[in-house]
Length: 298
Image 1 (spheres, rainbow, N blue to C red):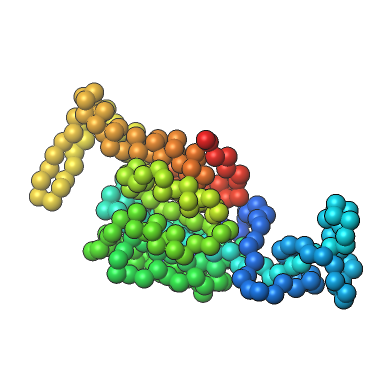
Image 2 (image 1 turned 90 degrees about the vertical axis):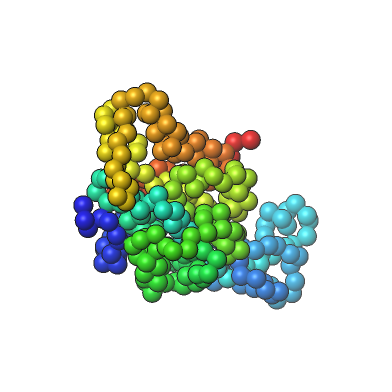
């Protein structure tokens, strides 16, 4: 499993093929800011609003429904579409730098982030990335393969080893909230315990005007440990957990399984979509979440 301990730029680039086969659901855009709206519709234009018809307006863009309701002719106004932002938030909690099957959770996080970056390229989005840090700036938004490569390079650095400075997922989401604009897509690569430590109220504000997807990184050993003695080495110390013991097994479940189950149960009620992503799963297994309507539970 040595090749799965740390991600390589080459493997993240190769994941571009995984993003080519599936198109995201069609989504709306939010227009560029500005004071003037064009009455002409052209390529890359979207409906903004309607106003009363004025001399010189293009008759092809009369808003017939509003005209019929108001009894006065109205025309539709259009504005330029704006590229959507895909923002990748990378949790760098120390617990992610571990794995027993196929690859480390950190490597799987980098691979899932790479898939998200290539999906953004395919969909014409700008791509940015950040982690929970008070000293490292986010990877700024950029479009196309060049923008994706900047993000991939950051994912390789962040997930090669635990960063010396990690301010946590909460700080990362604070940074994300300042970058997001309505209509953005937010992909969160997270340790389940990082999500469990956050108050549930953090998510509705992010999901209200954005597509939010939370990927919970896990390992098969965490999900289904054997009912046996399980040896661990911590530095110079070797310990054994007796997972045939019901009390020990319950503590294991509370530590590893419960955070995943809790997040999967609670996040949909906030408007976010969530999926557990095991180290032995395909790194693009979460793609069906894209564009899926999410009903918020009151």
